[in-house]
Length: 235
Image (cartoon, rainbow, N blue to C red; front, top):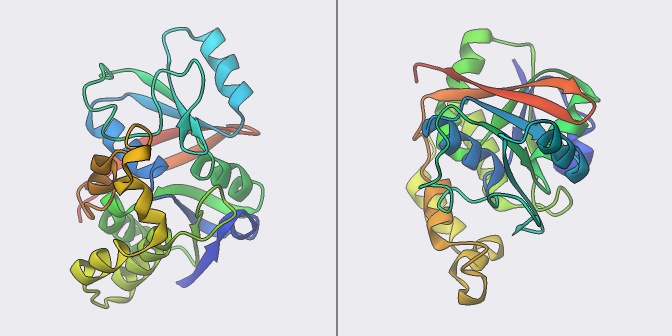
């Protein structure tokens, strides 16, 4: 298994084989929490207008999304695991669009990616287990960073962790998570000015590594539309 760690949108453009698009803060952590709360299906989209068109066609769908971290006007929820905790989502279909994660799906699908998974710390071991079981020749771990243009240490950590699990190497995740708290990309979760956009509980939920025993697969339906489904793994 040849494993390559790639970075940002240009990395997604070079992805090949089984591709894990990683967005820890917060898109693909959120999607795991949504499925754990009973969501039936997630439709991940690149463009905001695509999300709005889908909502017009399907008024019962729930719209979740952000740009620059801030909830999009008229959307039901922002990109927040904690702020959707009490939402009535059981058996619902969710439309999801973000600045980084869903953009990575669009770019990776246009490259040599043969299978798309979403990636986060909360289901990292399940992802590694799936890759061991399917044993693809090529694996691309794409760290989406902030808006797909600025590296983010939490995504890099997730990629390194998945790679270490595949190699049978141990990582001191307690130490790694502690180091992560020193990174500028984390500061916003502890800044009172941003508490309504980046709740500190989001940070806590997103770093709870290996919480979920399932992988999320993204299947391309249209140019920027992907059906995301949940598949349980034994970790």
